[in-house]
Image 1: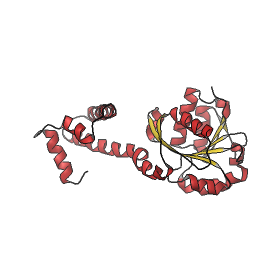
Image 2 (image 1 turned 60 degrees about the vertical axis):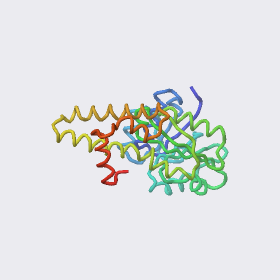
Image 3 (image 1 turned 90 degrees about the vertical axis):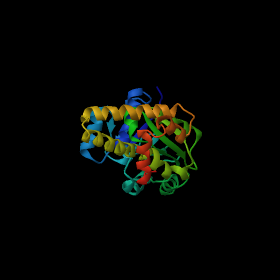
Image 4 (image 1 turned 180 degrees about the horizontal axis):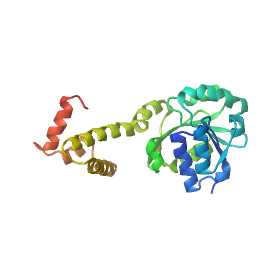
Length: 251
């Protein structure tokens, strides 16, 4: 068990996913984790569910913490950074931000000086320890901070390192991607129900098909067109369905 101290500023779904991962694995002791959450109902839920200390302010939250995980909504980040700057110690504190669309450069400038900032784009499957995150480092982050962030995110799934300039693109892929897949699955389920299959059976068929397809894709070196050809026989029903997609500009 590592002797790190971390505080969560904001603890929505993604913040909770990381919190859930590190408490379940024991990566950080509960007594070394604090959080600050302005939503009172949410704050009570986090405190009661995970048994960690709740701070009454940002300054109290940061006081004894080495790592600060920013898990606030992008529209609230400026206000939070103004408060954080008042108590931020560059020789002690390091920031890990999961705020979508907020660059490490923006946070560095907001905090002033040579602040250590690392940006992470997690995704919803992290709630089930199957997340896929991207990590990029700011100009002043240390190797120790980068290693810590990698280990932290590993408690919720997998990650890859990318350049910070690519993080907004990553947000549209792994960050938003699950919603795209869910929407497509929704349409397939609805079509199945309209054609006489029960909702429960349709959902199970679609879910297992999506999981199996992901495993197949992950375990193969074939390109996407080649994988498609493994399923779509010439003149068959799959090929005809794909042609409908093409005719309607899906892809």
